[in-house]
Length: 426
Ligand code: HAM
Image (cartoon, rainbow, N blue to C red; front, side, top):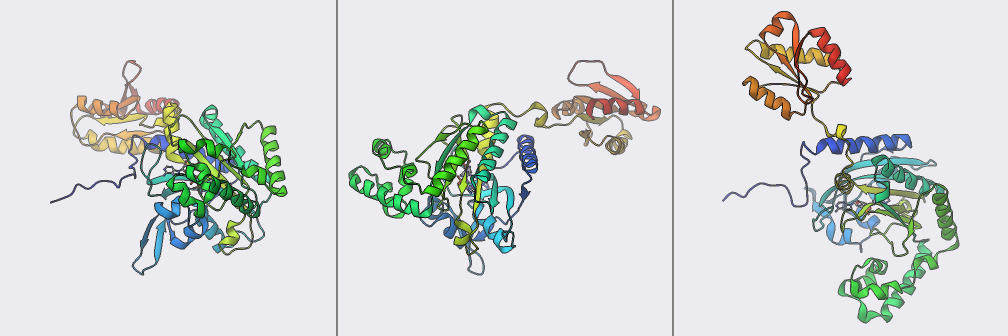
């Protein structure tokens, strides 16, 4: 019996009707990175499993249950990247990008997590991320937040996203906090659900993330990380907040924001929206000053974020923010009537593309009646059909038939037709 071949659950095809909107979004993102002078880095989508286990943390959901891990033919354990911060650190160390210099990097591409698929949550999803190295102060934290805020403005969605901010302090401060948190949870052991009891020994900070309503009251009274900050982290956080205030960026302090990956220290943040249901985090990031050293490099501060592109795309769609002109489709559709016209149309198409480099032109192939060709012209999205028949060929002319505005068709000298196309579509 044959089984039907289909895509892997949670992994999406991007169909031609959707790709113009994605290309629009990717253009916006690339130009933004250029404007801040961030440089692109591309790393493989497969890395040694140990890289992720050692950076994201053994006790995180990602490493415990969401990685696509397999042995290659040599028996080496490899993993499809569930995120890209670890791989960028690996590549930057490997190629000496971190020696006595600062770096501002960005990447875009697919990530893989074995999560339960739902709207906004997939097993292959795409991120654009940035990572900046070698800068300790809160100014670079502010810069990447300002960059993200500019993106929301650029896309027209600024009033639909909220910035949530927290500081996790230094590793020492966090260790002390962890102890007081564990003591608090121990004293309320009977209120903890099974998952939280398990986390009590592995990752107690993550209990704060629990959405279990039965635990809400107890969690609200839990000791807060912000009250346990070391002096340096407190100053760092205050300075960041005052820069954001001065720049007019609103934020909400969320003392329970801990993020799901272990490498963070000090600043952590998320941009969330209420327009997407439960998967409302469009961007998450923070500072990870210990990670480079943890992976075997010299102590090097790092900070970054990643945006989930599917979620951003869903938001653009929901809010109807993809501009009409970004939706794609041909400008003009060239059709041919008569036997010799078919080849002439292909040649004319090439000539038009030579002289009109921005024209989006589809040349009809495959024959058919005038009516069926016009139907295809209409479906192509073109605003004008260019008709090449025996008469036009004999007289060096071209007929223009507007498809959208109801105006009359007319036959012009070829040069005049080119001038008209140039004016319409340049
Ligand atoms: P993250 O919070 O795990 O952080 O992911 C960042 C964003 O990726 C999320 O806010 C969400 O928009 C998107 N995302 C995550 N998982 C999925 C999924 N299963 N389906 C669809 N979208 C998803 C990181 O990955 C860090 N590396 C960010 C970072 C960079 N921190 C410092 N530098």
